[in-house]
Image (tube, rainbow, N blue to C red; front, side):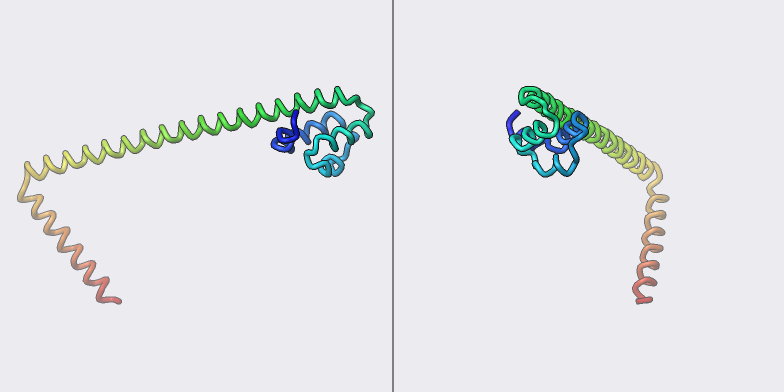
Length: 138
C-alpha cells in the first residue's frame, strides 16, 4: 500500500487498525495522520508485530476500503440512474395527460362552439372583476 492510498481511505483503515490492535488508542492512531511509516512504527512499538504482517494487514485494509468506496460509488450511480428514469417516466406521463386534455378540449370546442365561447367569456369577465377588485384594494 502506498501512502496516498492510505491517506485517501484513512478513516476506514484507521477503524480497521483499531479493531485489529485494540491496545492502540484512537488518539495515537489519529496523530499518525495516515503517514505509513509512522503508523507502522506505532504498531510495532505497541504490539511487537512484525513489519511484514503490518504491511500485509494495511494492504488488505486499503484494498477493502477501496472496494467499499467503489461499491458506494456504483450504488449511488445506480440510484441516480433509477431516479432519472423514474423522473423521465413521470414527465412522459404528464405530457401524455396534457396532450389528452388538449385533444378533449379541442373536441369539446368543435362540438359546442357557442357554449365554449360563453364559458370563456364568463371566465374572462369573472377574472377581470377579481383583478379589478384586487387592484382597487391596494
